[in-house]
Image (tube, rainbow, N blue to C red):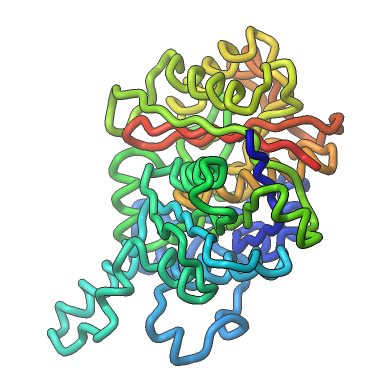
Length: 404
């Protein structure tokens, strides 16, 4: 089977805007949740979140370009640019694809446009349509780097970023492309989006103690904390990377996707379909559960998701899981960006032999089913890592990453 390696990484996240900063922050295991002033002013039901670390768009774009880019596209393009730079550029030729995952697309931009439109039709900008397209970020990446392979945008809700990486893996394996820029993004810390997620009961209501709100797998969890950000990977056929002398972080060695086909927002309680997805990803990588060094769980901090995922992990690993962590306790939930950021963190954890702690975990029934890392990073031997992403609508996507 064709080997697909990771040669570039780029992130824009609450934990930091470089790969090194983000990994160090996640290793520290402290939540980044805080009150968002703009949401507090709007008196949204939940006004806490994990905002992007300080970011200067003018480091990446001209003033003219910025007038046509919403926040989502800005952070996505910047993360992709960092990944391409980190890879030392893209392989020569036209055979590069772009694969982007987003759960919200231009949702926040649409919200702003609607508000502006109520003030008069003349307020609608000429660039409204390309700004609002969910495919805008993918198209702009392709245009910037001359990527003439497939340019695809995936929306599998919270699994979107992992789906994009997995589908890029399949495209390279099949020979459709030789390389790809793949990842995910979202920026949903807007009043309407926050009201909508609060209305469905997904968000933590611990607004008086933001830093303690997101607590994956903990017995006292009551919902997730919204974050914003993007992460991208440059993937290449192994022989192409070797031929150009590229530095290799590791491989995307397995991927699987399936659907609970059960409920539009709630996971299947017994976790059986999610467990099947994990097993299929391991099979795709030619591995057994015993080969996995640790798991970067979806671990949102919602009551139903974490319970179902704990059961699924217990099932997949025959009652003896490897160390399990959830990055969202630190970063919040980046929705379409979550699976991509977690793939980056998972691969770096496997390379460096350190599993980050799960922020705010103090105990609960989940600990009887899975080995949850908490308190401090846990040293492990270098080994493949399983990264889980599960989205509304029952979309499941699992990646296996093997360190170099």
